[in-house]
Length: 243
Image (cartoon, rainbow, N blue to C red):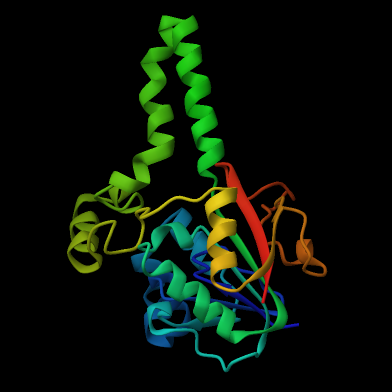
């Protein structure tokens, strides 16, 4: 079994079946011996703990340049909370590139924030505000859960750093959009299924974080936290489709 974990960020799997692929700064430090020697001065606290926990089965690669594998060579492609960060004209090209490298009947597993669920929570809180005026004080928090990553200017991680490091990170790495943190589109079970079908995928099917057509999926730990629960705090949509 060969599984690609595309745009993995810090959510990696150490399984020999999985190749974790990304271009972020943590992985570039991990794969470069010289940079790795300076990691403890660059990363601190939680960042350093994440860095030290990264496995070795990592491919540092810019996915905007395609997926560096031959046609029909991969059993499973997985990506989580990546698609919504791509412009609408880029997302189909990315999904077609995945379809190219998948074997016939190979599986694509996509995880995205669930717009339908976010809308339900928003409307439920509108009703709560109508019943109890004190709820209105936290209504911006509910709106933020839907749109904060669409309007964010500065990286969420950088805002937490000391002033000098914050200044340098913003100068070198750029704002949230340049780093790919902002949401460019949102998906629900209808438009994601329709998009996959239009691109030639078969049998789009909704799953839960711990269900899959991929054999032994839960052993890879990609959609689970250390306790075996759902990794993503915000409600996510899990969908699989076949080539």
